[in-house]
Image (cartoon, rainbow, N blue to C red; front, side, top):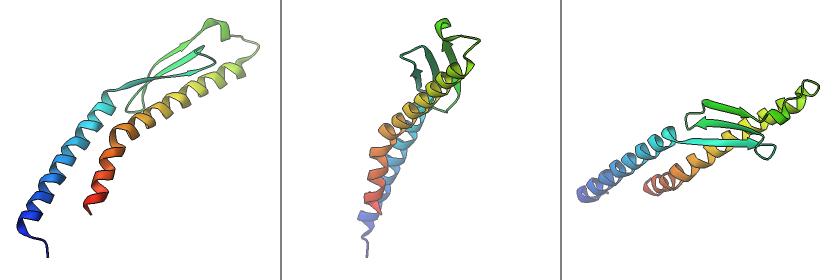
Length: 104
């Protein structure tokens, strides 16, 4: 049976971890990453919430005869930005989630 003091300590630890998790989530939402494709010819800026806030396309890749390549570069930049947001979330939340697993 769990002692009252142990339960209070456990609850305090859970509240502290919840506060850390909330802080990490706020940091992720406030963050911005830049995904790139074609060695930086296409850049997509994505917020931690997954929304695209900017898209920069170097005029060198705008070829009316080859729209497919431009589309591929845009998709590549978006995928890179998405991966960077996921990595940021893992970096911020991953260690916290391990702490929660140890509690239960």
